[in-house]
Image (cartoon, rainbow, N blue to C red; front, side, top):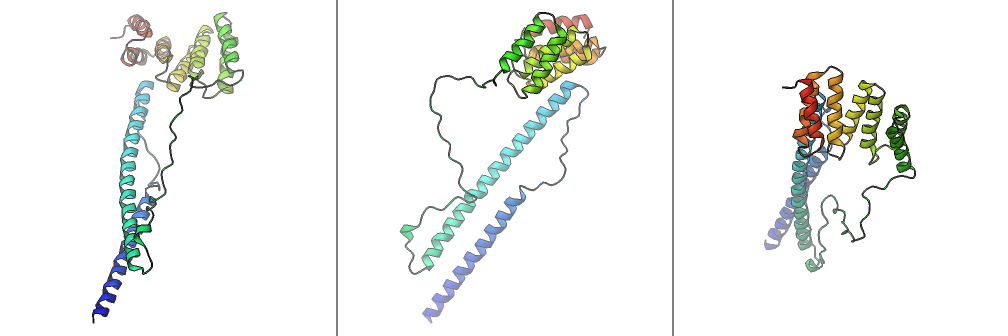
Length: 259
């Protein structure tokens, strides 16, 4: 009778383990669904002006970053809970096996695999943050010299070629700004405005961003888009209160009669 009760208890325990494994399987399937899309993306990036659209993009990035952090925390909790459950099941299965030594059980592997190890950085002498490609600085300097010499067509062409040859260059924002200045010298205000916009949107917090934003606002004013020009010029002081371009933007706003 006692032996029968022991066998029944063992069968019940195995059934419990089987049930918990099923629950873990369901949780893993739910995690897999987190990586499946639910439909076409529909971010709200509308705006009446360039700056409004830039602000909309920044807001959407902040929302997605926050959502990603929430999902990451949730997945971390599920992984930790699942790993603990797997470890508990391994312990209980070992108890049921006649030849299993509990003291020799290894640490349970993290559910989903372990996180990649991060090697601590080794202290070295200061290095440039981004290394320029061979000839990159020389081509930029050649275009800059043409601009300084007043050869605006040559400068515009060289800066355009630079932008095509070195996409993602640390000098890209400055190259686009200078191309805009060259186009401005040629009297092509519309294309100059596009170049200033490309410079600003390419690096909206970089060292040339205040000047690019000011030049964009001034170009919009010359194109007769006074309302957008005033908004754009006003943003210079808001975004870069300590930049020299603030004074220039203020003078331009006065000339346009911005309220």
